[in-house]
Length: 430
Image (cartoon, rainbow, N blue to C red; front, side, top):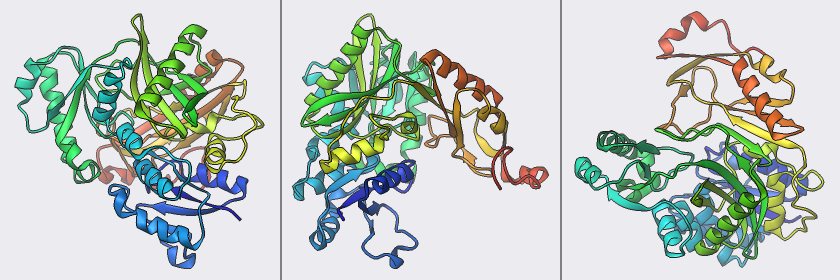
């Protein structure tokens, strides 16, 4: 039986979907994670504890295991491990992206510099030190602008500023986030700087693609119907197929292809975020990974393959009959976080599931767990999934389902006492 190495960060949403895809393909899986598995001693050789932040220190562990029995592919499920995946695949002579390209895709300042040098439309920018004087920097800035860490994803730490006063407040808020021990460890030297870039007005889309020998194939183009204008940029709705005119969709794919070529990416999944307006299409992000969260669950290709199966097949050199997405419209809502606090109750799940077109409502944060909104937060409250005859109906279904949900958040666990008798959410199994 062939085997693959899946690099799965401990906080990944994607583990189950990739493991199920591997099972359907009939391949043996070794899981590499940044936390030691509790039952590792019961299945020696099936798990590896790795440091994704310093990938050069983890490559030897992977090579030693590969010498015992080779891997057919090394695949990262999330952005944190793409650099290690590229390093390992390169040494093992497996299809891979250049290490320099994966590294640049993770670092927004490097990405911006490469896109600018290649004349790929993207926001103008500059990098500033967190030790700098916010007021002085603000006076040298054009508005509106966007401040963000150079290495965090999912809109974490991204803030729009419309004037010097808002700039100073945003600067200090991001600076505080970057001092968090976990964030500082993840970023290393990058935690001492941030990006200040031009705010690009207009609509926004997300592109899901697959690179094969440098050629980018479109898997799905998602509209984002809710305006993302700041001050924070919480993503909510992803709807596919796109309702944009064909000429604009073609331009979006062409611009994404230019961006991947400029970076030097050649193999595997690509997730790109782009904005468009009367001046054209602008690249915000290009990541050498697939879509985050549980959003991929709405996608099916060819004869019913999941996105994860497509990724694993391509990495292993297994034929893929078709990359055509199912013709049915689909969408997902990343449930907006109403406020910070401790999640005490979620009501209306059964009613939300009963809305026509809704496939599932999945909560990711449980009762008694802390809820942190953007720009500091990193976890989604949950997901609502839908299918329908057309994008308009899918969007309507998602909005109706979300309207059925009611969230009760409290400042602290001390206030949970009146709710202790209720151990589960309505509509969920005990």
